[in-house]
Amino acid sequence: MTRRTGAGPLRRLVVLRHAKSAWPDGVPDHDRPLAPRGRRDAPAVGHALAEADLLPDLALCSTAVRARRTWELASAQWGTPPPVHHDPRVYAADAPELLAVVRETRPRVETLLLVGHNPGLEDLVLRLAGDGLDGTLDRVREKFPTSAVAVLTWYGPTWETLAPGAALLTAVLVPRGRKKKAA
Image 1 (cartoon, rainbow, N blue to C red):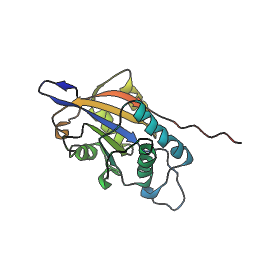
Image 2 (cartoon, rainbow, N blue to C red):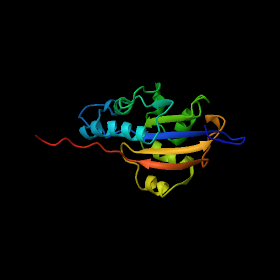
Image 3 (cartoon, rainbow, N blue to C red):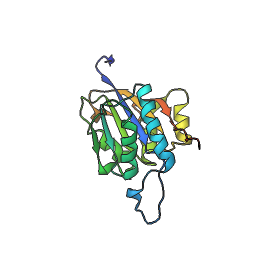
């Protein structure tokens, strides 16, 4: 574990916007399923997180069908997925509400995955990032598309101490699955 004297352990907040969803007629927003592209992209997210050594200790996931399915398909790519908490507060939350949920995380969790929705997630990333590496902030400001992943790192004794501007945006990934070729 990497430590900075007096600051606490290195913590990572991995923010994942759900994969591309469908818009079927008559289906309430909360119940919208993933679109075919979303069903391809979500496993690619799982692979990308594993390859980047970004597997979480805990996942917080919106209760919306599209977020839950994104989590299921992504985490199925790992040997043993971490515990997940499906929190109804993550659905349709703005940045301050999301930060309040994140701050409730137990101190033993060093890498937390948050699966949710825009515009709240994008706003949260921009609010927490005091700086970014290699143009990451500009990428998020330009667009935080479906299946996008933002990685925020910071040192802190507990999640309660996470504050706006305190984190470094170290990576932005947008994994995409491949279409199957017609036979």
